[in-house]
Length: 305
Ligand SMILES: [Zn+2]
Image 1 (cartoon, protein in one colour):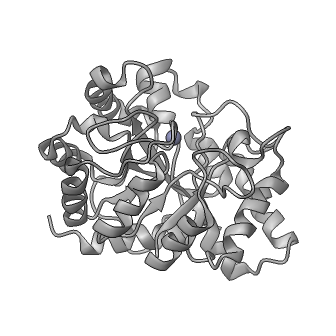
Image 2: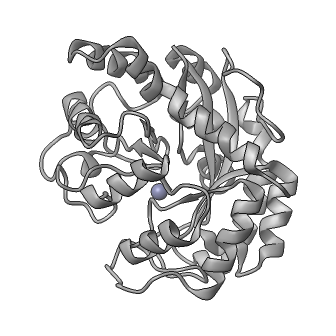
């Protein structure tokens, strides 16, 4: 079954952290074993000192992209989902753009950016993070950026964004809001998870939510299990989200996960669990990868730049 994953930090690990593709959770072999046809590789701004290094980090990741060992779609996607692993690129942490639309254009022309997480965990030129709980919305550059992202068919990723920023995205972006790697707040209270109202807004606009496999996004206390992943999937499905659900594993960016779900080879067991809980094949295919695929195709079609 075709699987797609909306977020991992593998490129950051290779280009900025340790330089060893074989030490990553996401490898070409494991992607193939897990049935992953499309893996989104984030160009992550970086944590400490991010403001100074973010743009250079992204350039370094762009330069290191071939070391991922999977072919990347740097132009249009094919008509149908691939049967072997491929990658697409995203930006995580809009400080990479340094407050300049020109930067966005450079990255998009070089490598076709599919989505941008507008903030990481720090305030930047675009807005404010979920972490810290600021009540302020997007800044003027953030609003302008959304217009350019619409033109280029780049999805606004609200996974690290605060709630006021999220509602500004809903109001100002023509493309639907997505959360590439966030879960359901009523099941786990982490500040990066989504309220029911946010989930409903994503559903109403036909966006996307990628379930994150990081334990502290899955349950408030104790070790998370595959059943916890199912609870979040099912919780969003019960809000009417069967057409916006998918995965945002966060592989290579996390240090705790449900047993058996530490790398892409865990996807088949997770999909089997959905079947065990009574999900039909068509719904499982949507969650596994078709929802993300269809949205990426939709974003490409509205691209006018
Ligand atoms: Zn993240």
